[in-house]
Amino acid sequence: MSDTPETPRSNFIRQIIEADLAARKHDRIVTRFPPEPNGYLHIGHAKSIVLNFGLAQAFGGTCNLRFDDTNPHKENVEFVDSIKADVRWLGFDWGDRVYFASDYFEQLYGFAIKLIEKGLAYVCDLSAEETRSYRGTLTEPGRDSPFRNRSVAENLDLFTRMRAGDFPDGARTLRARIDMASPNINLRDPVLYRIKHGVVHHQTGSAWCLYPTYDYTHPISDALEGITHSLCTLEFEDHRPLYDWCVDNVSVPCKPRQIEFSRLNLEYTVMSKRRLTELVTEHHVSGWDDPRMPTVAGLRRRGYTPGAIRDFCERVGITKSDNLVEMALLESAIRDDLDAAAPRRMAVLRPLKVVILNYPQDRTESFEAPNHPKDDSLGLRSIPFGREIYIDHADFEEIPPKGFKRLVPGGEVRLRNAYVIRCEEVVKDAEGAIVELHASADLDTLGRDPQGRKVKGVIHWVSAEHALRAEVRLYDRLFRGPTPGAGGSDFRTDINPDSLRILSDAAIEPALGDALPGARFQFEREGYFVVDADSTPARPVFNLTVGLRDTWGKSRA
Image 1 (cartoon, rainbow, N blue to C red):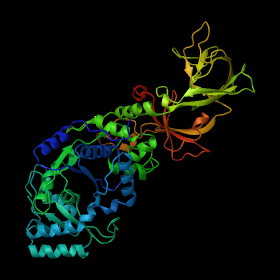
Image 2: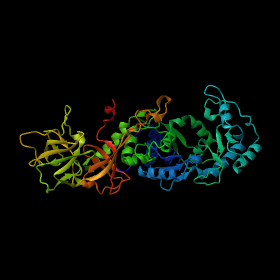
Image 3: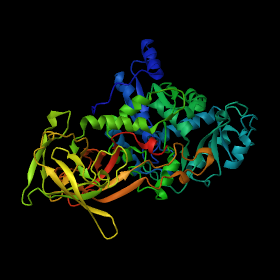
Image 4: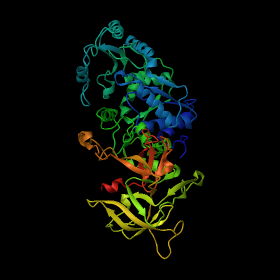
């Protein structure tokens, strides 16, 4: 799969942009990706990144990266840096167009002064709880704040003193004066500014104790940057009238159009930043980049590629209908990508020694095998073979079930790229556990079928003398059910206790010895794996990315 971002498929947003350009409403398209730097990006953000940057690229426009950093208590530079790294890794570039909402704090404050002067904003002394009570409900109108009719002069004085730090947190807010009887609760005099002392903002330091709300900051930031199409998820649809109100009532150079689309809901995971943060802080996972997390960093460490994630986002599509996307669709995207690109290697995850009795003790051979069965350009590799080899415990059954086509007592099996062997003896320990097999090899079967008989099974192996030892981390879905926390239950009770199994003594072929972190391989007959960041030459570590086929649902049916 190409590392170059694909051209977006047609969707209703693309059609809107095409119509706007045809009507000469805009000379060029400007979009933006506006994350809040209060956590790591997840697969849902990737959908927005692919959409915003992809549309800008498709129409010869630009896409800004803007951090909506209006809530400094939950934000830090770590999140800023991780977001930049993730967007770049996904294959997109914002050029010199990286912005922070905090870049506009002074302008936003000035606009708020103008709103007060026009009678469109006032300082309110109601507490947060009282404000909620006065707001009303979906079926009942709100009530005017007792401070709604303060004079312009008093509001200007109080707002200036709010900035100066004269009042404690929660003592006063600045609210828009719109309509307390509006059927849209978002228009019932929403809060525009609140006081927040005792926090050092990652961009502005201690310069401000007065912070604008997201609903006020976002539309004005869009307008100041000349955004033509402000794309957001459906939960902001009811906020659109407030978005338009803010833009209409301040002096900004353009009026962006807000367009909503459905957010990405993915099975067997959670997308809420609050819940993701709880998974990290409560140590249910090892960190934001834990390979079980739906974060871009976690998917990268799991072995996902930028191309596979972009392809997944395109497969999901852009609609206005909420839906739950099957995890199998994401897994199919990475499986298709790695099937075409990942070099093949042999790794025995649960080693069982096999001694080939008729093979000379002092003899070693090297067999050449393709690095990829469908891509000759990846070349060949050399695989050593000797008297003692390892096969996987799962490839031998003393009492085989019906249909078992691997090694059994007295039965034959083909060693991939090597000989046909027959199991002659099963060696057990004092407790009756199988510890070793003795076998014979048909030395005339290298590259040819045995004479007079058919051998159906093919298994992988590694030379015991030449094998390297590795740790293999088998990751599974983090939650047992497709909708964690459904019905109001605690989502943490749905955590899958078997989402990580560590095999500490896997045997791998020597060709894997120099693999660097991030390198991806297919372990033949096992799945796709990636070298983990914890890996060292002395102790390689591999993470399971995805199995060779989707057997998850069947195994839990």
